[in-house]
Image (cartoon, rainbow, N blue to C red; front, top):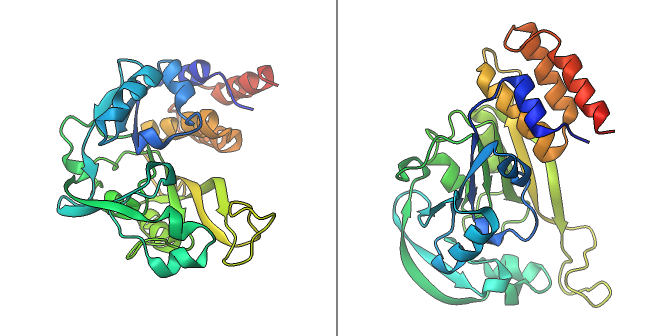
Amino acid sequence: MSADPKALAAILGLEAPLEVADIGAAEIAETPPYRGLLDAGLARLNAFDADERQHAKLRQTYGETLSLYTEIIGDGTKQTLHLAAPASGMTSLLKPDPQRLEFFNGFTRFGEIHATEVVQTVRLDDVPGLPDLDFLKMDIQGAELQALSHGEARLAGCAVIHLEVSFVPLYEGQPGFGEIDVWMRAHGFIPHCFTEVKRWSVSPILRDNDVRVPFNQLLEADIVYARDLKVPDLDPLLLKKTALLADHCYGSVDLAGHIVVRLELAGAVERGSFERYLGLLNANG
């Protein structure tokens, strides 16, 4: 359940489209959470993919208004890109850890490196032409914290960050969930929800003779971080963007409603905005 995004944007007084970035955009196999905002003209997409062979597909999916970037996001140094089979999704700036791969059924094969390539990475803060971001979605196989820690200026006004975290890191030197969580909290974010939690079977026992059918061992997850509302004096515009993203992208109408009440009490939206928001929700069942 969520509100009509255009109607909610009108209640919030949001006029300019939100700036969305997706780092690792070509890896998307499902409809991304921000797609409805793009279709409604309420957001612009800045997509990152260094493989120009993927650009035609991205433009076909998102239209000619899409801004495409070929930079490999990192810390601004030259690094080694470890190329795995495309279907494995394990190509990374980090080298796979053989011991971790052996722990899980099938991952020795998934993490097999076919070639390496020296590449120049670019700090998120230094990407030419990239606007300051309102929403970031990122899945870059273990280099997420590297990207975040070199993108603080671009993310200073970011409302929501959606990224992949690992409970059992598969790459050498990869920060785990705990390290990323500490960084996010130190920069004014708290966990909001998991959109996917992936488990995997531990070697050598298989379930139903299928490496992809898990028992209980956690592997990784997609987690959404939103601004910590306990932080005083949050910018009303930042709160408005958080409300729209919470409602439309994740169906978190409770968080959105809480923010609308807060904005109304502060005089940042018109009186009666919360009642109007409830009306939108009721209209959608």
